[in-house]
Image (cartoon, chains in turn blue, green, purple, cyan):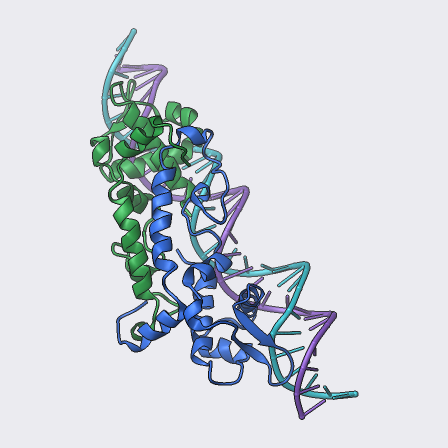
Length: 145
Length: 145
DNA sequence: AATAAAGTCTATTTAAATAGTAGTCTTTTT
DNA sequence: AAAAAGACTACTATTTAAATAGACTTTATT
């Protein structure tokens, strides 16, 4: 399951993506608008900023805005920032590989390949979906979330 | 991430799949062999049994064995028993649908479709992989887990 | 019939991870 | 100088996963 952190991150990016014509948005406003606990959102935005996805400005009139085009921000990358690995087992992770500790012998474990396939299938979808796609779908009247 | 419960379940099924020519295997033996905490394994086996995947026999000479052919036990079904939904968001779940609570308005949420696609991609892999496949791969010398 | 060897079932405890909060510091504008 | 923002770190609470405990039931053996 996706963590709330990730859901909040996506929501924030979508909101900022829609706000792109306007001046930067303050954390407090964003938190209220998206119903996200303010201090929690603060941390999330910081992470996204430190990863280069957001631009922030301090002081009066400051706030947050996207640092990239919404079409260039892919959900995979966001998930990796907020939730870590995409794979369901650490040993099948591309970016966060770790040895599985239930597994005494990597050579004789029969499930890794399956979960690498799952990972690849997931990656296929998530690395093609951008924040812009999410925004586009919202207005489409499709049933979502 | 897969829970330990699920990993243990898969391990147990694999071990029982290999034990199919022999008399039923006792929980204690299985726990020792697979290095799974005994009482925890006990619960897991019960779940698998109640779902129809295992046969158990009480009393002296009793124990557990597969109740289906290993080729007919698919990982999807096991995951659903031990971890619940396959989807990453409740509103994208086929078997465990729930409304997402961060989402005030299902109509205007842009991420559901993406996570339905992810779910379908995952399902595609997991519903084609059986315990027999896992066993077959073990002996293949492929690097796993 | 008695005993021992198993599994069954439910409740509880512990530990880890997630979610959320608090507070102080820094930068920028007015 | 003051006020309005974000930056950063530490802490607390809540939830979920993992593990443990114990009393009960069934079956085989003697």
